[in-house]
Amino acid sequence: MARFRNLDPYPQRGLRHVLEWKLGTRRPDRQQPFVTPRVENDGAALHAANASLTWIGHSSFALRLGGLVILTDPVLVDRVGLTRRNVEVGLALEKMPAVDVIAVSHAHHDHLDVRSVRMVEAHNARLGAPRPVVMLPTAVGRYLAGSQLVERGWWEHHQVGRVRFTLVPQQHWSMRGPFDRDETLWGGWVMQAPEGTAYHAGDTGWFGHFGEIARRVGAIDWAMLPIGAYDPPWFMQPQHMGPEEAGRAFLELGAKNLVCMHWGTFKLTDEPLGEPVERMHAWWDAEGPGERGRLWRLDVGESRRL
Image (cartoon, rainbow, N blue to C red; front, side):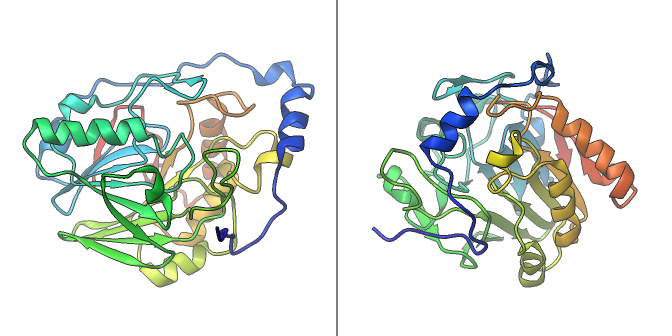
């Protein structure tokens, strides 16, 4: 099968590199205790007519946008593989209205959780609602047979109601098993609606095309950018941005607000769970646009109006 490639190629990391990382010496000061902030959410914001965004945890958000209920990269279970959540799901599925769209960025297990997609489909069925449309990068539908799937390549669009979805390039890779490396595409979703434009970057390292995204899709109001899973840098930097790179991407995008994600939920890499937001705040104060209100560091379960 044909394999997909990044716009900015980088050397692939293989089993040898994984073993070098996992079996190498780790600094004890990198293992600091941290409790990820969480608030209770009764689902009221998502049921209301006003546009809103709720952080469920990791890269999972629930949006009310353009009259639709949209879930990004939903992971609604207690563990991904052997990795348990450090904080409960921010909004229980039973408190949500029917979901119109699920937007998945790529096939990694912490972004495409098949169990969670099936849970959402069953939730809609209990409410007497149609199956959600599942928006996917090219070829990812192979893992979700039987769902209502729409696959798109980079820069391709699909309209659902009043929301236009565009898949944009990211710097990453894909794999779910030992023999399917890069056989499915990865990307981020831009969601353009009457209330504004939201951009969910999925997983990405820094690459030289954030400015191109802004030029091609127009003004971005809410940029959901990953800020965690960056340590050790020699292994992670090509595929995961750190806080400073996320800040640089935010400036390149010319976005109005930066929404932090991909931190505090799963302990995937070596940095302390709370370090990404500390470094994000430090970068913002030193190099950011100044207004702290434009940096959205949400608690898990927190909702904000859009």
